[in-house]
Image 1 (cartoon, helix red, strand yellow):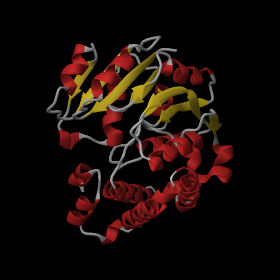
Image 2 (image 1 turned 30 degrees about the vertical axis):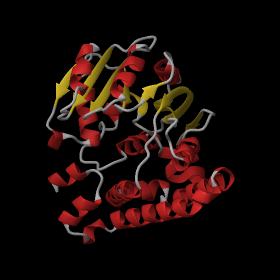
Image 3 (image 1 turned 135 degrees about the vertical axis):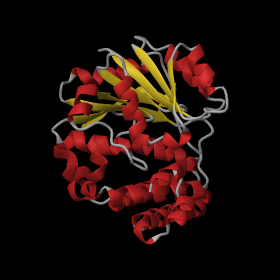
Image 4 (image 1 turned 90 degrees about the vertical axis):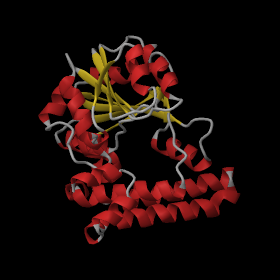
Amino acid sequence: MKYSVIIPTLNGGPIREEAVTALCSQTPSPAQVLVIDSGSIDDTARIATDAGFDLIRILSAEFDHGGTRQKGVELLESPEIVLFLTQDCVLKSNNACAHLVDAFSDEKVGAAYGRQIPKDSATAVERHARRYNYPAESGQKSSADIQQFGIKAAFCSNVFSAYRCDLLKQIGGIPNGTIISEDMLVGAKLILAGYVICYVAEAESLHSHNYTVFQDFRRSFDIGVFHRRERWLINKFGRAESEGSKYVKSSLAFLAKERPWSIPAAVYRFGMRFIGFRAGRLERMIPLAIKRNLSMNKGFWNHE
C-alpha cells in the first residue's frame, strides 16, 4: 500500500542524520516525506531538504502535538496511509516501514505502531520500559479488549506509527490543543468506532530517552493534565493508575534481577512520577505560571 511520512522536528541534534539515512533506505520508499520544522536553529531543516524531503516551517509557538500532525496530513499530496516518525527515531531495517504498512492488509486495522528498542545508552529503567510497552510478540487490541486491558487497549505511539487517512478523517482527525498523548486519543476513538490497533513487533526502531527525575516529573504532570481534560477516556477505558501500578511492580521485579542496587533510586523516580501525575490531575487548582513551570510542554500553556 502507498504510504507517506510526516516528521515534526525541532533541533534534531546529532541523531538526525542517522534517522534520515535509515528512512531513505526504506523499501518500498514512501510516496512523500513531509518535515514540519518549528524553528530549528541547527542543521535539521537543511538535512531534510538535502534528503529530498518536503519542508514546511512553522513558528515554535504554533507547534501542537496533535494539530501540527493533522496539518501535515492535510498537506499530503495523495494520502492513503500516513506514517508518523519522531526526529530521534531510527528505523532498524530497510523494511521497517513495509512491516508496519502491511498491517493494513486487514481492513479492520485503523492504526499500527512499531517496536521501540532501547539504545545502548539507555538506563535499566528505560530498557525495561521499552520491553514492557514494546514486547517481541505482535498483537492487536479492539473494543473487546477494553475490559481486560483498560486504557492500555488504546495505547499507540506516534514515535513510529501509521494510520488510514480516510479513518482519521472519519473520526475528526488528530485533535488540536492536546498537551500530550494525541496518539492514545486517536487510538481510543478508532477502537470505539469499531477498528483495531495493531502492534507490529517486526517493525523495529531504535528509540529511548534517559530523562532526569525532574523531566520525568514534568512529563507525568502533562499526562495528568491530559487525563483530567479528556475525562471521557477514563469513563470509557478506566483509570490510568491501575496500569501504572502494574508497570511499577514489573519494573521493580526487573531491577531486582538486573540491578538491585538501583531500586532505591527507581522508587524515588516512580514516586516523583506519581506526584507529577496527581498534580496534573489537580491542575485546575494551580496558577497558570506555576503550571507552565511544572510542564514539559511549556508551549501548550501559551494558548490558555
